Image 1 (cartoon, rainbow, N blue to C red):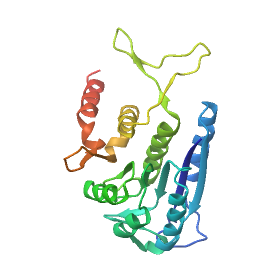
Image 2: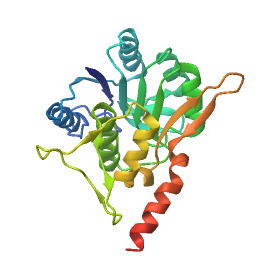
Image 3: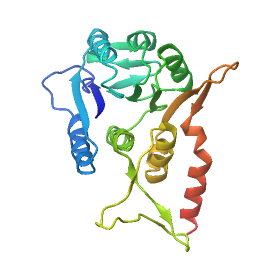
Image 4: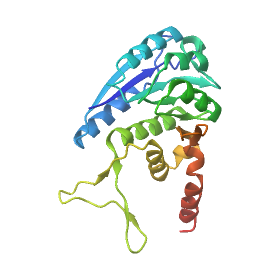
Length: 244
């Protein structure tokens, strides 16, 4: 059973604890249930954090039980090289990397504005040894980015609908004999992001990016950025749609 830990900060920038505000939890619960229908069972754990201290305690527990959790989703306001906790208190990159060390086998998704630039990703991956890190390079709208995050996590945890091309060039989903859609699954996070860009191009528009390190003997680790890897494919797909 795949494990997903979700850590969410308060969204009210002034820290008004009794004000109504959105949460990613209902959407992730719905996705977990839909994955169960497809035969993919997910262990979902949700916690709130307010300060760097809270987040540190939670991440320490995640690392202690890292065999149980393959993915960690951290949702909060963000700025360059830092997350924002309650009352806009900064959780800086250097603090965060210390909390996430070592993270071998864990993939991190940051639902935060402006946080995950290539230099931030390189710093995080080198110091933590994480499997991958994903997030946004610019300011993002809350609803659209939350949907992108949830769809990516759904693809990683349970797979995505398979598509084939007919002899006439149409892209269609093949059906099983029981009229269920065929599901294709991959543990390659870069490949999954390519599927996400294909199915939901808005994810590329709002700069959702996944970073991994390619480690080759005798060479410096090379940063692989999905935003650049699939840019030509996205542009070509849009051109085909425009010409219809």
